Image 1 (cartoon, rainbow, N blue to C red):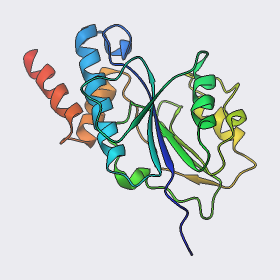
Image 2 (cartoon, one colour):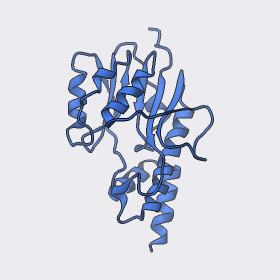
Image 3 (tube, rainbow, N blue to C red):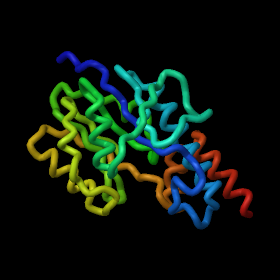
Length: 207
């Protein structure tokens, strides 16, 4: 069976500025430290995206790119509106198969992001907090996301129901970084990344 062409990889993210990202890490971390962890998470994620075969690699960004931005990735601004509208617009900018992830799972790998839609219409990656870390669509349809309640314990289930009429490939369950406990668990899953190194430095400084 011939595999489908490489997909467009989308990363939706906020510029890692103190007070605007990872606010649930404060406390125990300061807003500046939380932003530093967010930057490391985003840098790890984009590095993996840059190393994954893709038709296009796109960062859908709220804010401005910084030194954490690798070469070879397009930057497009997020639209206005709720997260469902912003995710819908990200898919709306694609003209072929696309896989969208966030900046909260720095433990992703190229293998996880190399998806094939030969025998499915969608890919869905659930998150431990009840959301989802990845959504892939062979034929991007923004209406599959509009109106889905975001940032709730039922977000993943609600989004999964939107895909009920499609052939869906389930991706592995991953843990998002929201709390300090999450950060420690994710760093343990990807001990060689920037995120784990940044967390180790912050933890050592508190001893």
